Image 1 (tube, rainbow, N blue to C red):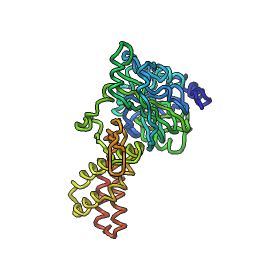
Image 2 (cartoon, rainbow, N blue to C red):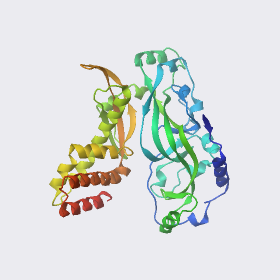
Image 3 (spheres, rainbow, N blue to C red):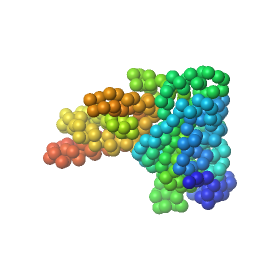
Image 4 (cartoon, one colour):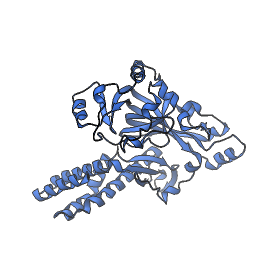
Length: 390
């Protein structure tokens, strides 16, 4: 199944883009910024030129070092004799996301989205200035992720030897992942920076939404296809030094998740991500426990409760994102050969307040189940929720 994105929905988008200025004059407003801050675009992730259910022939194709980001799509990848060293694993994934993706100018044009519509707009608020490129575009995508094809190099030494054996055998980057799911692509339709915008949008004004101080019109929908791909740095991919020294980011916190020995590599990857999410809950717990309310010691004890941590960690599935994996290792155990996975996961600051509230909700439910939710504690939990948004 191939879905080339030139459907009737796209034709409608083209018509919208052809008009200058905002598509609905009621959406051109001034005042305070509205809507969530989505941050982005997600590094190294690109919207595909063609959505389909089998992109495996693109895995391991190399992208020229001098190819600018605004020109990258999967069709620009080149297969060389070293591509044979790059195989792939089909792994399960989960989460609901609302993000900006990189997109080549050609792909954006096929979607009917003008390149200027997705660039940084100076003076449009801090959130609006955090996405887009000086050239090329970033496109808002809202999606449910269910699967990934992830590149796997079984013989790293052979791969490097092949790359070094002749000029042009390899570049510094190749196509390393494809993401599968369903969702929608949004077109920026105009500025929305007046409090009245939320009320008008809530009444259902033709599929419009507000985010980052802009009005967005829901455009092309896609259903159960590989819609995006990720570019892998060949040198970084062979170096898992981040296991011992975490990267740093002003936009969030990294965690390394390590699985216990598992029966399959898929289970190992899932367990590694679960471990990363439990660390995120513990990270949030430190903030919650630091509050100085009268019942803080009781609440702190519940934040560290194993059942609460595990339950809250499952609730963070859409907040804590896998950034990259080490090659899955095979280890010998008394039960036979097993698999161990290590993942670098990222928890964005913009989700901290929402995740903190979700964790507090989990604490409250557990305390209620245990008969420990006194009026005093319930009041303190309500204060913690208020503080989470500050």
